[in-house]
Length: 260
Image (tube, rainbow, N blue to C red; front, top):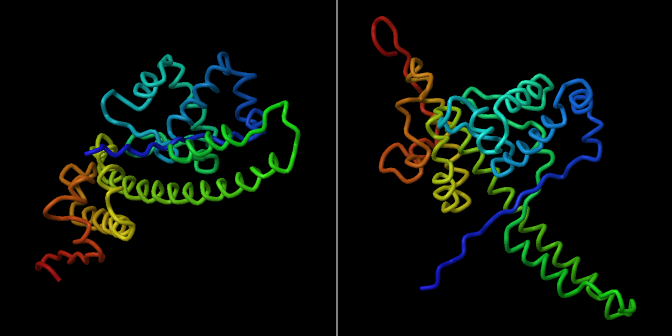
């Protein structure tokens, strides 16, 4: 049996033309020693966060997110710490309760396409771009319409990809906020979540939110979510799955005399 190729998604940032005119960037480059290096680190962090819609998840492998970022980017730890501290104060970066770094500009700058879209785009350029010695005849102008059709098709598929990625982020973020142990499972969660039909993806998000609310109410002393079900088993497990939490569960209040 032929093996089905896994869809790969390419991400990019639509960098604003005023990026280097931003006061935070200008101030960093002019007043801080090594400011240019910190700007480059910030840009690398933007790129690293793209697959997760602007979040660099803290996996818990090293002491903190700064150490993990420094290792992944091959940058000096002190420089990464300075960059994180500066851009936090500038309001462009936020460290969450789970230790992950959220790049606040990314949702406005992100773009993406699948490998199939990229292939069609490359083939479009290969097959239809006129050579320099060709005259602009009507036959050479025809690809303009073809390009428009392909571009519309690519745009539709891109919108679908973005929708799926947004649903995955909504589901996964609910669990990482509930328990940091889920950070290490994100690739496995992605595989299982994307297997679900669209209507079940939405149900999984509803279930995750209801479960998180219920668990926090039932277990107020467990601030780390130590005993929560993980994000994978919530999809494929035999008990306490998203099907069980499609409606908000009302928790009975405890009094001195018992339950009411």
